[in-house]
Image 1 (cartoon, helix red, strand yellow):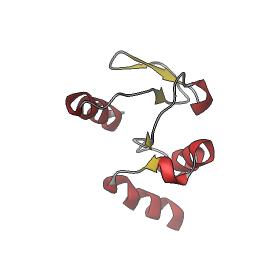
Image 2: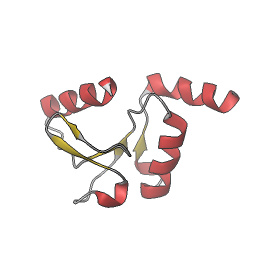
Image 3: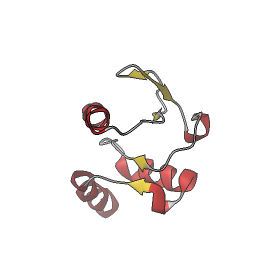
Image 4: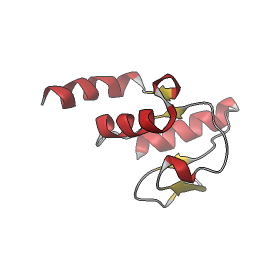
Length: 88
């Protein structure tokens, strides 16, 4: 997604190392291999940043199950989508 690309660019400019990208569709993102699930990531990581604008509630739930709620970060602009998805 565009948000994932923006997050990857910002991470690179800030010196943050991206341990991996997870998307059930797989593929590549800015030269990074995209894994289909969290179990496929090769290394330890500190947190998960959710950038899925299409199904943010489901993605957050999968991330929480995989790594725990304290390690899942959701940008403010997606939090409103979670509330709207839950209300629908």
